[in-house]
Length: 216
Image 1: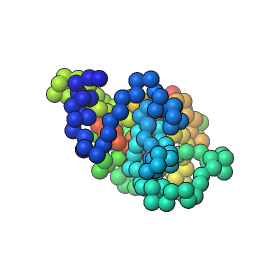
Image 2 (image 1 turned 90 degrees about the vertical axis):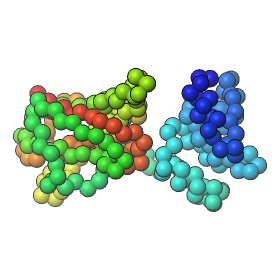
Image 3 (image 1 turned 60 degrees about the horizontal axis):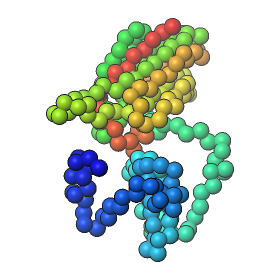
Image 4 (image 1 turned 180 degrees about the vertical axis):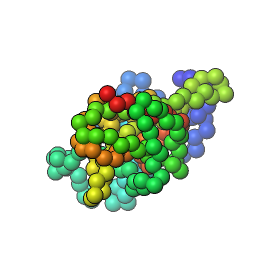
């Protein structure tokens, strides 16, 4: 175990017990396929909930509800087979969208207070575009790359009835890039690029980024 990790563990409250599990015996017992894993256990050791991956504020709130009402309610993923996961972006205000032109890049910063930035361009039906959002690494005082934003992109079209999603990232967290490749625009008009982060408002990453628009 590295000295940095040992220092982090020494800072934990006394009520938190840290176990070493080099052979993954504990992971196998609770049915977890990997790390990081968060588990909610009852006082008798019964596993009430397991979450694999980054524990966000929403996951923590769900764990709290389960702890308050153990054994009540259920979720069957088969009941939601037709639901496609999508980013929960904030309402779009065209007046605050930043114009971006073909072959042009724009820079910004994702923070907890500002989890998305909107860019706009006009184009015609049948035109093909590629959009890329890249995290910009910040260098820590140690000289090593610091944490970076986990990019996520959404492309919307505007019409008389509002906004329609044209394309969206399928990237997973820890990626440095998000890319919408060779998207054919369905109609003449105004389009909006939403530059945000993985899990949007509930995400944990932050930092500077660069967005590039390529018209093919």
